[in-house]
Image 1: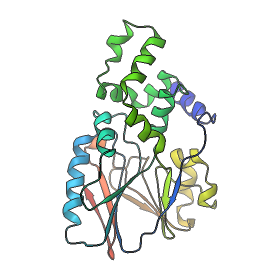
Image 2: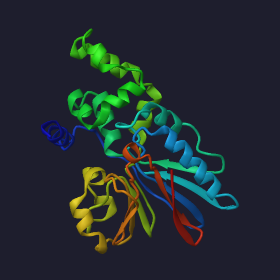
Image 3: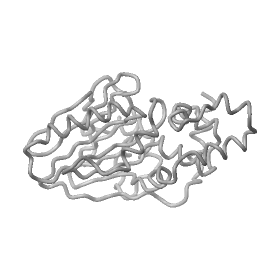
Image 4: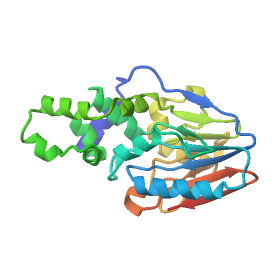
Length: 258
């Protein structure tokens, strides 16, 4: 718990430079699939994408996949997930990948703004394994600084660029897509970035007062959870094996899951 609190306090210290993009998107005539937290579960992501492709068969309009963040840590194949997401989306689809708190923590570590132990406390060791790094073995051979240098040099520059470029939110007049949630009563452009990545209590308590639907992840639930005007689709893929998407548009909405 002490490491986690240290991690949160470091993230709140404002070391990251600048702010991430907030994308205003037009969803008229668009079939949208929002996908919950992947957490290194590459096999489930592949299965879910095939279900999305099959579900969209026959739809001739714009098709958009929105990933809600947390692609890394905890599950076994974070590197493979990132490599997949930097490739083109399925044929006929567009894709937006949003930042989750695990991506920002991973990037903070890679850029020297977060100690390794603070990042590892949130599941980063599995991410290292996915890049072929055996931390326990290497720690016996190298100093801490040498080990950090080795880890940072093992992550492809294309993956680092992906982490840096992730927007923090996508929204239309009717719906917002974000990793953790929003603080009720505050305009989207004024939302604090840390809230968008971490908020729970205030967001949950004010769900009925939101001015639009909010589709989010971050808090694992056994099945998709609708409360007020928020919809949580993080079904804990790394624990449950269930990666979930919600389909919105074409006059209907339903869930797809592995």
